[in-house]
Length: 87
Length: 417
Image (cartoon, rainbow over all chains, first blue to last red; front, side):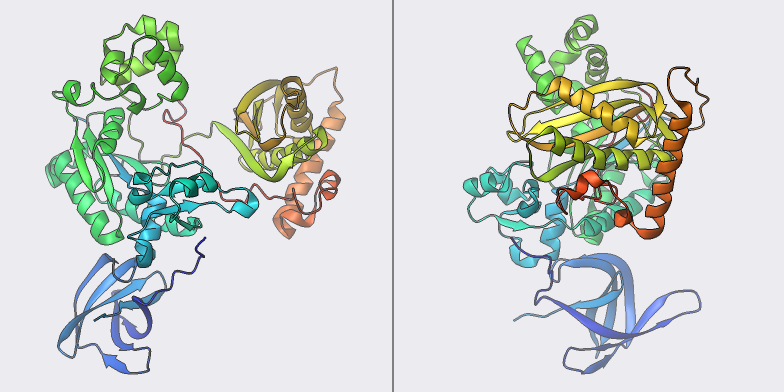
């Protein structure tokens, strides 16, 4: 029987620096990758509830512009994750 | 305002959520199954690949593995399923305040009042279907109809990720050719009785005489006839409209088979204590005790007996349970699981006639004693106090049915039958 461990390579939990706006919105500012590299988020272009089939999970999905490229950042309950790009 | 009832059913719910969270197993047959070490080793849910291989819900793991040797088994994670269930209900709540859950994975919605704002039932159904897929990563089948029974029937017609519409105009073509067992409340026994009388489809039920059906099946016969003719008028409950509790029960599959009256008494003690404590929490007493006995071959029976007056005392329930048990079981086989349930509930402060023939002082003392046990357990935990009869078995029977996660089947007629 498979255990209760849901971790797998497609789902990367990351450290995130975020801010709470005065209206209650939670906006991520920077992502710290597994190897310690820090990526500033230039802009958040979309916020919506969404599932990630690739990473296996669901939460609030932030579409972030990082170095000019869009990337999905998910806030799932109390943790942030990103989908690992493969290939 | 015409009723527009949707029934939304999350496809392969537990297995769907597990497959979403475990991408590696998505392309394989998967079953969510209980722990074999605790003898809860049955299939609780499966995905479509497992279904195609013949795995069925409720069958033991060994049987499922025989049919499908590369079946991936995963343990259930109820907190995770509850989270998805809540998220789905939040989506439903965007369309109506009439959301009536039917278990964790199903719900009825009456969107009749949202038609002006959100469009037809079918349109709303498609919107919900798309949103659940996008936002939750699982799929739903939605049935759209003018009553709850046909809406439910509709959600079973096309799976997964689909919408089926049954209207007043087309229900004869769409619903009537379906086998009778697809209708809500037609289980194995009813289906066999109907078949023996040449009634095979929902249409056959609809075209039978209600008097005949009543003679065959009792009052349910007439109810089924009403359902089959599209005349179910039960309303979809509003969110938060708590249905009155009709019964309180617990059951357990014990870690080993029970072999003697002493074993059975010990388990009934645990179950009745839990039921009694829950009755008291809700401020209720019950008039009737039901027991359920299942032997090691999985054949089971239920018996019930009434009390002279309503009670919430385990010390009155246990002897009654044992009476019912002894009168109905001859120990042909060892026992695998037991259940106890109290029905005929009344508020605990309902005035009761005291009896000249029983010791009222002792009864009040027993009430105080059990209240004291409740208080102790709420302060120091369930296991701070227990029956000596359970010590004999060590930790084996020391189950805590009250906190064990159980998902109860939900009655369809909330408090109305």
